[in-house]
Amino acid sequence: MKTVKLLCAAGTSTQILAQKVQETADNLGLEMDVKAASISGSDDACKDADLLLLTPQVAFKLDVVKMTFPDKKIDVIDANAFATLDTQAIIAQINKEL
Image (cartoon, rainbow, N blue to C red; front, side, top):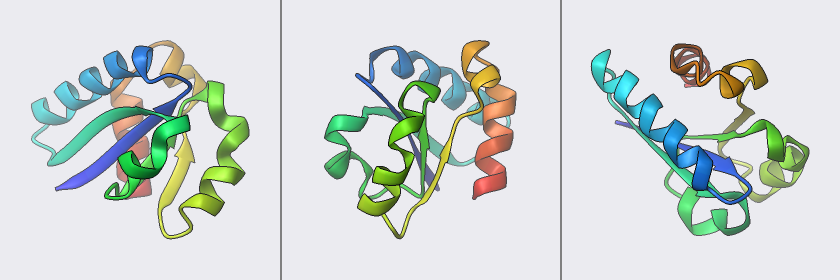
């Protein structure tokens, strides 16, 4: 099972997105665990993740996250997919990265 962490400023609104992405993955029969976490407390939350996806609001921290987790796959969620809660597009992005 692949583990994906969605990182945002506080983790609150992205928790809803993570739940919806998880529901879509489950409905498609994909074995993945999708969770949200705050980027400020991401060290412990992300150590076991296979993929880290930053929300557009924290995209400016991409280089810092890459330096913090040099062995992780890291990307920024497509802004349109994030804004419209397009879980199919986010699943496609996850599959592309993994």
